[in-house]
View (cartoon, rainbow, N blue to C red):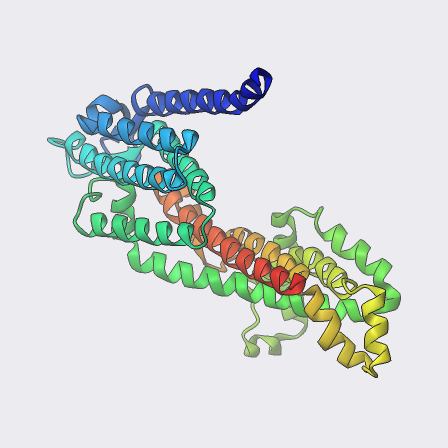
Length: 391
């Protein structure tokens, strides 16, 4: 009996140790690292502002909420304990965000209008730890739709706080207010750029898959493209397009240009050929020989076998390949700004040119959000396809 008790106590002891380490990391991020950096203007070096000055009395409340969430998450006293952990971590996240906004306003008091309050390393670390803990608690609930509901709720709550002006003192909010229309246009351009690249890559991958005798050459080609640096490929495509336009000036009438969306779309599509071509090949061979023989015995033609057997059974693999291509395409589309294709990369590179970290974040955060959204959405579609397959 005693050995069984000891074996059962070991996971609980490790969980308590992990909770203590996690709580210590939260405390260090909140009070030992700078939460804000206050500067006279966007180009000046800022002075660090630590947790006690930024959070005030809210620091203890944030730590209490985190500790409560860790207790419910680790001990799991009841089946509903993970749900309480989700609520505690979500409350801590909102309270911390609101305290950052208010602390930034206090830190800028008495300074010139050009002064900026940017998020410091402690703020980013705390937000990352809270996001990790919240995600772990959502996973522990083992309930469908909890993550989506919590995500929507947090977005709405933060949006309400922002609408109420709680974050207006933060430099990131100032940058957003000055470039709201530009950001909206850049997001739309980014989606069009990456979507067009994935569509082009999918069409080319299908055509390459039809060339049965040349699959060895195709494998070398699509794999070889991956070793070419993205900037080098973009530059090469600009040069090729410029040469093509010099040889055939009439192509300009169709909107073709050496700079702009065309070379960016072609370059991104070239990098996405490998996962799509490989995923399509695996999807077409997902059906086992017995199933194919049964389809042949039923009198299916090759087209009917493709549409009715191979593609439905290979759908999870194909959706998985499309998920990889879509997420990576959203990231690569940032480099399209180097050749005048626009998108969120233009904001990122503008921030680099102006030495403005918050302007860089203004362009980078939507890229991350779009990538996570594509990953989550297509992952759900892939899971649904797999469940339908196994059903």
